[in-house]
Image 1: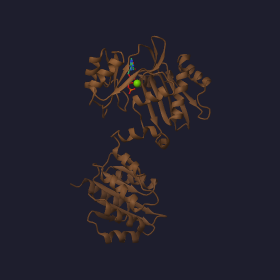
Image 2: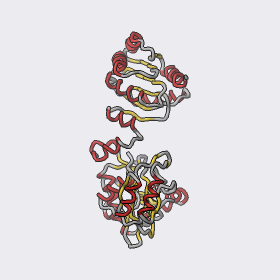
Image 3: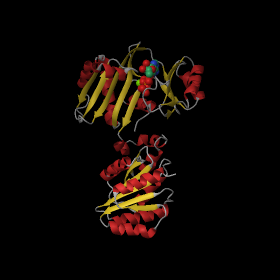
Image 4: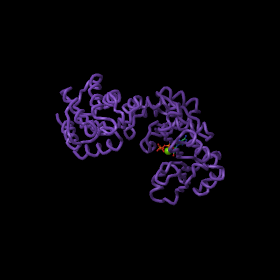
Length: 377
Ligand SMILES: Nc1ncnc2c1ncn2[C@@H]1O[C@H](COP(=O)(O)OP(=O)(O)OP(=O)(O)O)[C@@H](O)[C@H]1O
Ligand SMILES: [Mg+2]
């Protein structure tokens, strides 16, 4: 899960990284009051979980509280790369002398963490990285060793950062480790005119697998709105990922579900989701899965693809029949049962004879049927 800048900023402050004073607001009136408390001259920053806000008009200077109110008014409701601005942060302005870049990221390919840092931070960092990669230092960090004082000093030297950024480099590593993050980034980290080093923007991506021990963010996930379906699925303990298409997919086993997505795509349709109901495939899991998929307004048909292994197909069919008692089926369902006890499973569904449920004997055939149904008017 990505955090908003104002949340990343809180974590930075908790770990001793200097940040500029700031407040988050939900209305233009609040913006004016906050600007007054922050000394009048502020930076008004749209809180959206996407990069490049500044260039999109989401970061503006306001010279006094009235200007802050006006700027915030223009920012609320603004669309930045598909993200609507609902929260605005006002930050005390810092007189910037130089901008640096610092981050830690899990490099899965290399099987280690990387410190990425540059003396040329700011809004053009992507450009710098693309055209002059030598200006961006990439230094592996051994997770067992972490970023000691000595290591932080080495990173600073390698990136051409001033020596007094080392405490920030250590603090940032603490954020990564203690808060279970996969990415922490400060851009820009600045040298202020008065000599201080200050983090002016932050990005943190938390590891969802560690969510159970990071209670603090439980609520913000739910109220983010963007992933309501994923949140509903997570509440039911389902292994669900929302995708862009129109064919809902339910399968048992991650590998089978992945290949089901491919087969659906091969039929000229697009899968609406990934949903692995796992080995058990009980009536409850089937009902929960169906409920989530049917509540997705993009879904036009649903493809249930089950290969019975340890779980027999008749048990799965019973699960589907019982799920149909608790879930109002509003979209056509194509079921393909194969493997252990497939014949018995198919008979159970035939006997139930639900008008919106049809069966197919092969995975390809079922995918074609689901695709046709999704595109039928
Ligand atoms: N508190 C501040 N005081 C002075 N200048 C600031 C302040 N915050 C940001 N800026 C300036 O605005 C620029 C853009 O701000 P910021 O880094 O927060 O947004 P962004 O980089 O465009 O957004 P993103 O990081 O989401 O791509 C900074 O590089 C910095 O020059
Ligand atoms: Mg930035």
